Image (tube, rainbow, N blue to C red):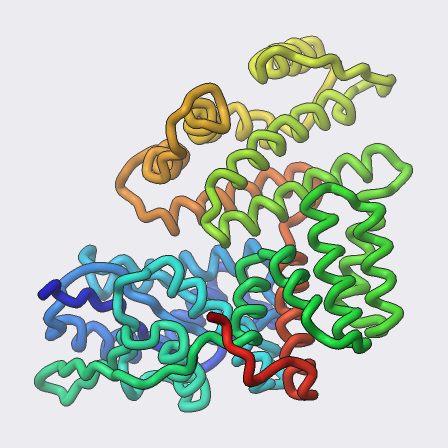
Length: 444
């Protein structure tokens, strides 16, 4: 019989709130880590007695949703380092951040966020057991994790008990209902499969909630196809039905910028939108779509520099180049002659061996100039510069590098697509509670 591989899960107590005091960035993280020191010590004692001696370990934290994207990525890194330092090199810690309103705890928002994150784990670890440490974390959050893990991992759930001397693992087998319409619909949203979710809505009666959901799903399909005018039309139709929800107002501002008549504003907004897509594909672990977008994003930033970093502004005719290296040659010549200036961070980052190495994986695959598959290990090891890392940490390096490049361009990363996804999940939950979906319907 094949040995069961456990995926330990530990939920830490408390919520990490966004700093509004006089703390510096680094001292704030020190303050946060100190609050978890006792819990990490207890975790260390348990893992020393754990039969499985290595592998991934998932650490769950409640986090204030007001943090910016770059701050969240930095926070993940700090938390993982802090725990790994105590546990040793055998365990690869991955921080899972449950984003909530720190001032107004909402159980339904918690359930939506936990559902999304557990689904993500279930897809990434199709054979491992979700092994939850008992007596860690807030009881309400612990229960939400338990229920969602049972629902999604099904027979692959275990509880880890500790009695000061030894660790005991108890496997839980529960009868799980067959797949419901609601679960399938929500899974499609979590997986960003907006077309499939849109098709499922054809089975429902035409209520205002269904119309609004359909408009928002169509808006997201438009965005991913770069049909920004159509996306704005569908968003405005949804807003007529739902009102000026903050996430919809924010999205309208971003779509409007993509259609701006001011060339520099529009070009920069479209670069940011490309990276929103990239972030979404990273979340899905869809490396083919990631590489297609990343290739175009690099090209877009380089042409942005040619057009908008000029020392003496004039109209630039962007001629088609046979290779990206011709674009770099033209940029280098213009920098040398002071025809363009500034944005050095963006220029040298896109010219780096990290970016070149990652995109060379694209060139040597079926989406480039070969028939080979996209090699996940080669991609992230090429980008990170060494094989001594995990895929998750290499992805985080990519996000941090992108954030630094954006800082140079005068913009910042955001989570607009993820915010829309959360709103879609909230809307579908409200629709379910109103009885507007087929609770009894099963997917066969």
